[in-house]
Length: 468
Ligand SMILES: C[S@@+](CC[C@H](N)C(=O)[O-])C[C@H]1O[C@@H](n2cnc3c(N)ncnc32)[C@H](O)[C@@H]1O
Figure (cartoon, rainbow, N blue to C red):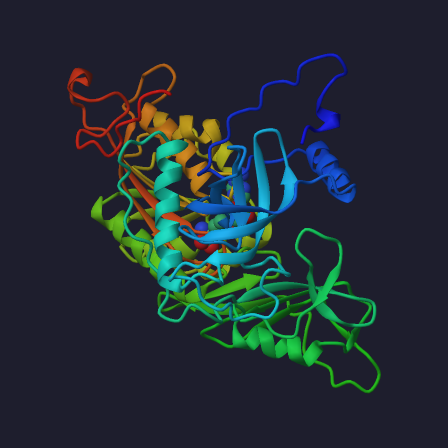
């Protein structure tokens, strides 16, 4: 159905942009989202369509083709299934839909464990058995590196999962209503959904939810964090309980968690990995990738409360320099890294501190927010003396974009580019669309450029796909 808002009277509609089925629906502007909601409210969407699901895309959606050939992103489906899907949004080049009837089910489909699945929106994959979730996430990382990063055969290993993929989230943020009910906002709406238990939340978080449900007053938000190893809680804000209700200690300034055999202080405003058991795997992999290169000076950029630095500094001959922008995380790092004489802590933006840093690092670990590094930091890394880069990422799309820039080299061609050695997906967020990756890159050996594929690995891992 044509979108009246998209066309000018008397002119042909502009051609629909091509949509890449495996990178997921394009990000919408606010204007586009408003327009889509208006059209949805006017019930201008096509009737449900039956289709076969062909693949898995980012955002936890699956992909198929509609009867008119348009790409359809379908929620709550599985590759190989035949489903009836209700269209939730329409654009000239693609549709978004939600499976409402499974006509031919995949053998990997399971009963979701949570009664709120599909309503709260926090999990996207509970209908898929856990082993298959790992296979799909591995494939997604590979696809993003192929399509966005243009690596012909990216060196991606199978995603490492959890032995018990429930009760792992050590930090939950809830919405609280005026009457004291606690829950989340219903997916894609401004409507409240009371929630009594979340199966991906740690038991201690669910215990707080149960104790506080319906009993607080004067707050609209509730954040609950727990140290899995210490049992310490951090509940914010300080809660006021309704008359006659037994209060719960809250408003703590910080709590402690143990990781890699060390205790970390974490303040309310500081970031900490939300899955402690998988964070153990994460720090172990990062440490291995660092030690393999036998560095002298390591920069831990985006260092938070010092999680990586504290463990990397165990190798006494290494000097570790941390860079962190948040003052709260920096204060925690002061405590967590105290007594480690080989660590220097710098507070400020990586963009400003990394270029020209002295002493020059020969190895850099980066763990940026979802937005990734961007061209400025990539250029600083390319111009630095860094021999190995360990890139921890929570978004395969921005990782793929940055890896392409790193293997292509700096604009002036003054320094050798990096070679992509490995990408190791780690499932920090079971049952959700998200996946963490540890990418390891080495500075390309000083071989005559004519012997190497452009921007690539002599072994082929970093070899780019031909331009479309
Ligand atoms: C994904 S967290 C990683 C923290 C740490 N590596 C860990 O595992 O706990 C990203 C961190 O980068 C910090 N950050 C974000 N943007 C920054 C910037 N431009 N410069 C320095 N730090 C930044 C945030 O405050 C946050 O602590």
